[in-house]
Length: 298
Image (spheres, rainbow, N blue to C red):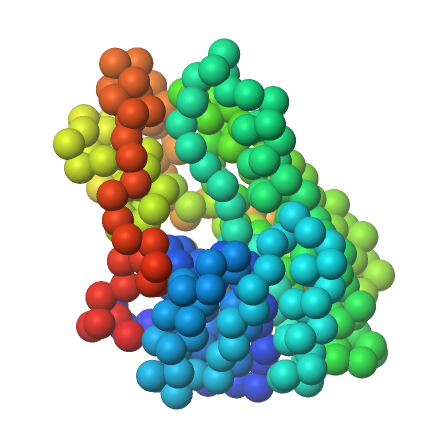
């Protein structure tokens, strides 16, 4: 699909994306890059990083891959500083790294719960905290505009009601939304930094959908969705472009729901037997390349 935005709306900007090497994260990396930004991708898998960076380079997008774990402060410090050393500044931080799996609460170990909280919630805070000094207006490596930098946190709609077998993810994303609001209040006031979130609905051709809604029961799931269809990664990337550009300059502290209105009809009412099938799903797609990006989109 053709972007509704001008191709140079992020010209001269530098964006750092966690989880930006695959799935929704890669599509955001791709579209930010296509619209003028230089891209730094942080991830734990070298093969994914190499593949993602190569794909961006093939389009003439300046990009680097930086190995690191968002749960580790020392990794966050190294990645942020490497981005500054390579590109000279930082304008945009996108926190897209996440963990997810289906499991009944009674079978979920405290360690499993803790792991998702640490990736999604703690990792988001760590990255924001370490990027702050470069996103502040007037600091070395500052955002290039007259205002401060931009933070976009990828959330979800799971916690707006309740969701079968995802207590850990629901709790983590509720925390992410709270982090978004609190940082928007504090850093928006003190440093003119805009902090917003995006809450995707079910998005086609992502690891999340292949794990949580495999093909064999996809038709059952859509019967309980208001829009009766899955979204596209492009939809989320366009929302990110809006929030990262001057088009969203008066938006701060919001989490933008991008799910076609499905959350309004509570698709979490999917019958328990169908959810039981979902919980036994195993990821079938290769994970050594940007997930689900056809050549026609590159």
